[in-house]
Length: 249
Image 1: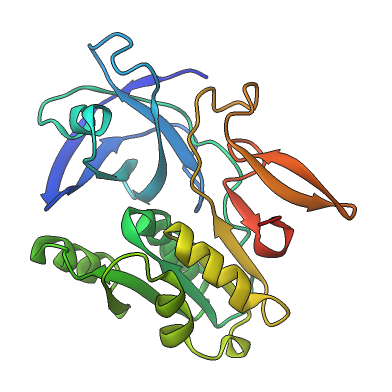
Image 2: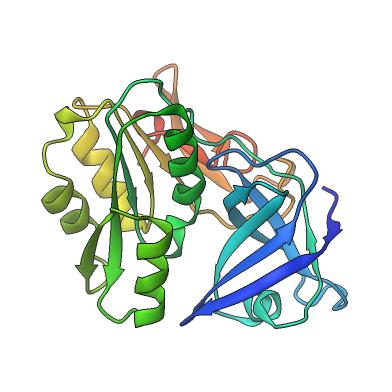
């Protein structure tokens, strides 16, 4: 996996969250794909690059990522003036239906890939509703960011770890949707899979630690059903987006 030096255009802070915009003239990212990224100039400190969902891609070759600062690796990415190394877009993203309406459901920093997905749906004229977790402890700046980036979205206040309530109580009758696209906490993903079973097709963007990002190390293995048997797929090349019914959770 090759990392490319990129020109950082801006870093904007929203509480613990940081949106990083950079110039990207390679293949545009597709909704649900991710990139591997690290701060330049620190050698192998930290040892692994960070996998981040592509947040957006705008005219003028401007790509963006959404980072929540949790440790040294993400702190270096968010540091003002820090140079970045970024990979090409990787993985298998959302397979977008041509029929609507559809629902987008997101929680935590993993709302990130839904921005690019919503842009794609608008471009195709596909009707969609957006439901996003609004953590009770979130800063006003971050809530403002959600409202700006997802106009018209339903923001659902949670205390954390309440993915089932977020999905089931607020999204409501899933049968009215042609498809569901979900990227969120483990609780939200599990609730979405359970609620959609036998009702509506659903695609889930899973969150796995990644090292090689090319399928060699199997460090991001995900249990899936294939031919009636449980096998392991690699989130970095077979995902990170999977059909909910295929996941062997």
